Image (tube, rainbow, N blue to C red; front, side, top):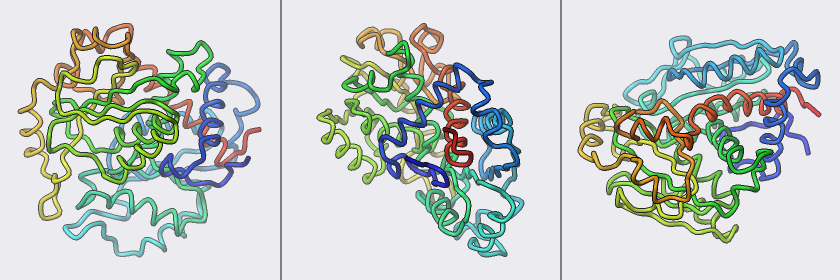
Length: 345
């Protein structure tokens, strides 16, 4: 089974055994970071990161991962080529030409393009798909407005480490994930939560989604999640109550996300989304709510809005895995890069 040269844009594009291979290698790399099997996996190879939106964790985790594998990390921002306009993404040069030229310079490309970098929901995901179509080198989605597959891998690794001494991903099968919306001054895309729905359901977890009316997720993502649950004999439930869903939960994943009508005339409405989110103050994870769970893990992809998405006492509790998951971004991406670009045995 070779993953060499394969794009990684959405976990649904990959077979389950391919995802499990990445997670298994990430676990090995975390335990033995200096093993000669992989310290030179990207020797003489370069990876370009295109950031249309800034990100502390994505930038740092990818750059350190590439360096620890012996490769060269290159970072560029949108001022170098494509920019957002009222009609979408525009450039004086065709996307197909940019992708083809970049393919002559580097061995792989990562793209992060979310929310305010585009003019309507779905444009960021489409941009990465289109770039990959014309690229001659593998493309990794470092987050778009629809999915964030790298974050999904890191979270699954962090959750399984808490439920199994060896980080066995099978330990999550049959467990219940409560994915709950959180009030926040941080306007966040649907990407992380939707990637978690797809990946957790693919791994056989029961799914509960809780959010206020008006914060519906992508219908296609929800339908695929239902199919994954059905295939794995798992349950799927949608709730609209900030206090429901905690009973029986093994993982509580709190995250703010924006409404599907966050764009007006091609512009993202930051203040409107913030004002609306602030009107739902009850949507916060508290110690009392967590007591109703099955001693659940608390998860959030960060940055976390303390006091709005979750109480400090929850964030700082022994059940919180937010820092473990943040660290795992590096390990899962090392595994991903090694298999896609370096073919570690």
